[in-house]
Length: 67
Image (tube, rainbow, N blue to C red):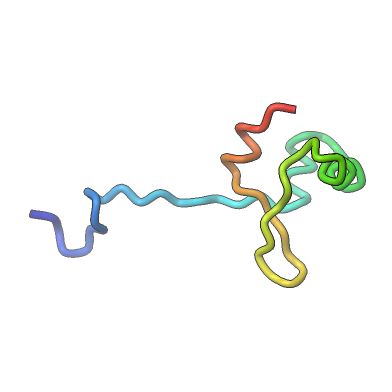
């Protein structure tokens, strides 16, 4: 029997971390212009819109990307 506050599936909750533009640029040591140039050229995954002026990428997408 599961515990009261434990989520279904045995307590394993997958959290998704998002990386914003500045963090992605720092991670790859590139400028914002380069990042958006790569996106426009389909060389980099498109971001996910989190709001009207906010985009980000799922961390696992960035870590698994092979350029």
